[in-house]
Image 1 (cartoon, rainbow, N blue to C red):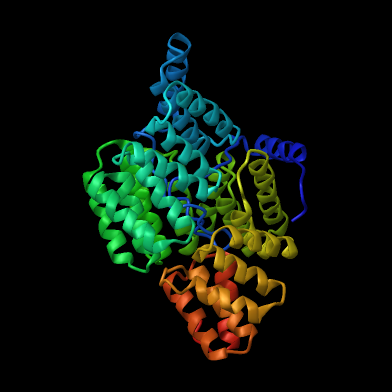
Image 2: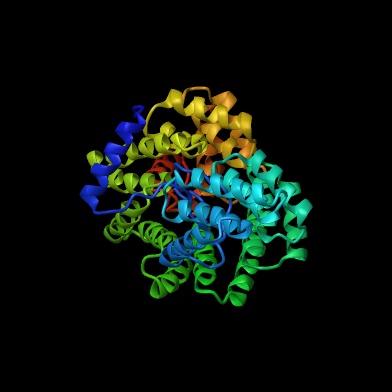
Length: 445
């Protein structure tokens, strides 16, 4: 995709939002796992801030600002405000709020050096910017002050997962479960199990978390996580049931809207899926839903609209970089599939040097493949599937690479596995997987 300056990016977003009557949102989302073919998981599930969402969160921020004008030395409120800014940046999506979070957290620590809530807030900011080494460092500092800090325990798990240290992440999840059992820990515990291929345990943990959740934000978050897990396993009816329950309570909850749209697309409900994804990207134009919407347009032959969505991924990346967020992993696969292949390889290599996870291995393998370096690509594709993580896109990528190196038997196995796991994992990718499988003499039905 063409590089876009930050000034141009703002103009493009403003135009796109004027056309869609949407609201600009740039940032991560709870359980935003990039379930589509072109965007991998940037972070594990992120729990809501004390159950606050939308207007409740915004009102809470305003109340904190008012209090701090009256009590400027209230270090507790400064720390709470900083952490609330991180959540607001994620849900509403202005990445400039990370800088506001920095200022609030720095002020808290000036007033009370070593304050664990402010250190945990710093960890959350670092994780939001994809600085996972920094997130781990700040989380450990917070836990040294308060071993029971729920936010620090949760962010430590996130950081270890995103650094590819899965054994340590599993131990951290066990420790967090002992110290502070609750929705933030349970959802991360489930994600660590899923990364190991144990989807049954992940589902049980999430179901248990849902049974114990009482705050509306927690219920919505966990139910959507269950829907996303079901979608990744090709269980579309279950995905629709979980996400539908969320949307009956809150019709604006974006993660559930996206999950429902993906499940509808996988079942052939293209019109409803398009409407749902347009709603999502109108308010939250992130790489995952942008590419999913683009691929739906592409699959129905509307290439002009597809290109519009792919181009906005570049807009998001430019704005993210301008505010200290590393977008390489989020954009590498989008570039490989729909843009600048050389840029895809650069981004994937850079991310691999920073953190070696199954997602970065998959991104690097695929970027090498589209650049014609299949022997090298296969090593990373194998590494991406080595933990047992049940992700159809990974198996599809591996199968296409195996086909390119001439290992037809292995390619048939990988492509068959991808389509059996989640036959609607991507409107474009699933179609290409079926075509490749037929060319290899496999059963693509």
